[in-house]
Image (tube, rainbow, N blue to C red):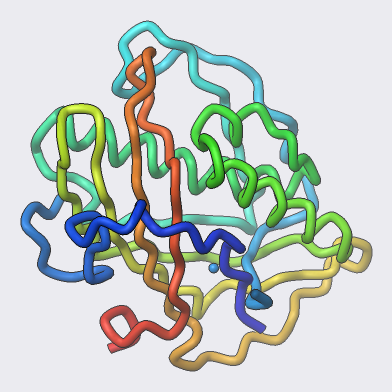
Length: 218
């Protein structure tokens, strides 16, 4: 069974320039009831640690994932320090979401650090659904084809793909993973809006997912 897509269907206002065509060839390159992956072991709630990302001295939450949960980011470097700092914060946002599912913590510090507004509310709801259903996550997700467009120095649109063919939900009590059925729906296209806060942290403010998107499944 595939992972769940984030129940966040918030487009980036209605501006066409921010609604990228999901996962392919933009100007600058650099999961309703579907299902996500993680584990029910060992991930503690996030704790502050010195930043190594885009915002200089700002302290970022420490995020850790159990050994059976892994996110792989392909072509996630552009060579531009500013864009790479943005992509690193998006990486940590994705990891923070998985860590919150594993830890059953819909009020995770890291979620509040890397999300904002409606995107934060949607992410918290998504995590809570896992808690309520007695589910966690396991496996590896591959994130690829990042398509980054800088709107201005503090706002960007980022589209990317996710390959969930090696990831699934699992029962939190038994630890048994759901059976994975690989199909076109194992691939998800994401469109996000990210904004830099006063501390220089790139926060996701809206997120739209499209499971089975042809540009990611091809």
